[in-house]
Amino acid sequence: MAKKRKVQESEDPEAITDTNGVQTKKTKVKKGKWTNKQRVMVFCARGITHRARHLMLDIRTLLPHSKPEPKLDRKEKLFVINELCDLKNCNKSIFFEMRKGKDLYMWFACTPHGPSAKFLVENVHTMDELKLTGNALLGSRPVLSFDKCFDETPPYSLLKEMFIQHVSLNFRFLAHLVIIPGANHLWIIFCLSRLMTTEFGFVISRLSRKMAPYLKLYRQMIRRQAAFRYRDRVDSRMALSQRKESNKILPVNIYDVDDIFHTITQSDIDMAKARESKKKK
Image (cartoon, rainbow, N blue to C red; front, side):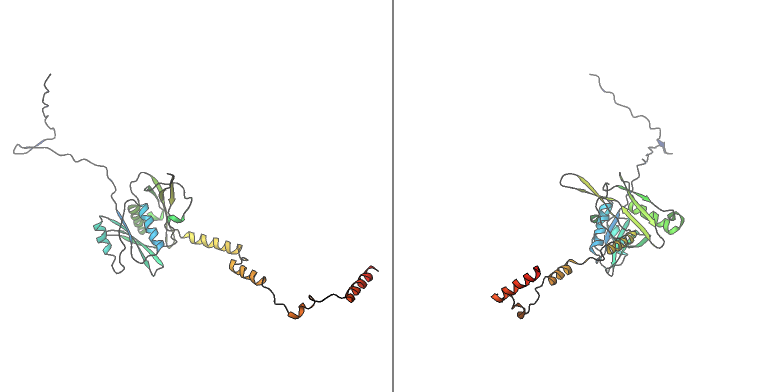
């Protein structure tokens, strides 16, 4: 068999010779594909209601790049969030806090240097409340649609960039996120999805609506229509009590029952025959 010849190393054209005659190779820096490594910490403070807690869990489900964290004590200041994000290697945070057990506030923050934005959350609806919501995929990429006001004023442009960094990530599939600015408040409608596998192996998806203030007006309109439709409606308990009162046995006077036990005599029979004869005439 023929022997294999050793391959001689060719001279590197990119070799650099120093003044001392020592050759050093120039290393090439490979340009790798950039990946968005944003990590968002989603957590809340103590004292929130069950609906706010379910909303926070829905956001964790919808954002695959989120990190959980136990509840923050009320006595702690907001500066502690920077330390918590540093421990979890997160550069963004979404924090929920409840004031007086009624008002829910949501903080969007870029840690540790800021900026941060505070929102009042109204009309919270979780994913478990929705039915027949269409077909979407878990962990899908959101489509951010901003109004033209976000490019005209600096505060809105800053909020636009914050939402992009918090929510958008390089996922494979698409979903929707619509952000519409109002006159004095901001409307945010999350239409991202959650997947659920049933016993038969089918995949069912449900959408999530985060904040939708216009739903309050819609509910009021429905309530007015229902109130107009059922204005004469009687409660079932009141109707039952009315039926019971109508079916009560009326008190009977003892002296009115004497005619029932009256014995018929011959004179009564004669009087009845006389009345019949008069009617025939």
